[in-house]
Length: 214
Image 1 (cartoon, rainbow, N blue to C red):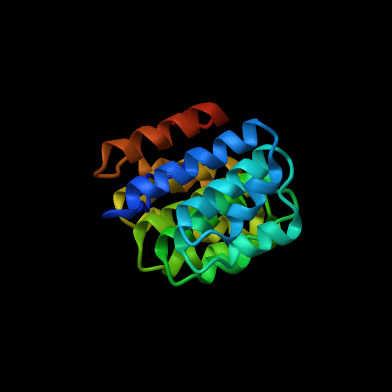
Image 2: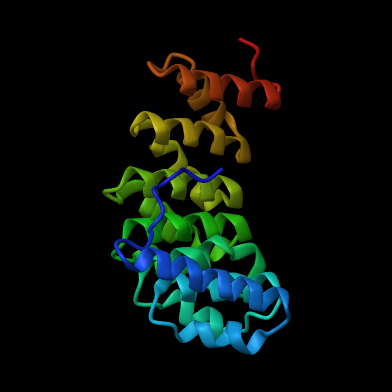
């Protein structure tokens, strides 16, 4: 499950106009007026561009060019939206967004890569998990490494057990994707963690793996 971050929203006087525009896009999609929906990809409002992408993706009509535009959109909210639609955008490459300047985009890209199980991203996700300054990004990267389950990500997940509590909890859960004595030892070590949720997560993983015996 992805960590929660406050969503980007339109502010000021543009908020109402943006909401109306999104409503128009949604109505157009319901009516099958895809020309109107697609035209909104060029709207000046980020929320409208994001809304158009959502409608096209849900309608199965978001093409490679539409996705590429969204992933490189000048507004981070649109890039985040594209990542959140990962399951509906087969073939999209979210890896470049792991280097995005906006932490919300990096977090969303990590989520997307875990969602689609892109093993090509393991090395870059491991870097985010180890070194990104934003803990939400590190947490999302650890979760993605667990979702992908590639052995190349094991070391970064184990290292995350020394991070802040939220990341440690995520790492304990992610270790369910890996096997071996090192993993079992790390999870048993978590049983003495000062955070009760880390202890609980480790106990559950050990129980599911049948390694909860002393």
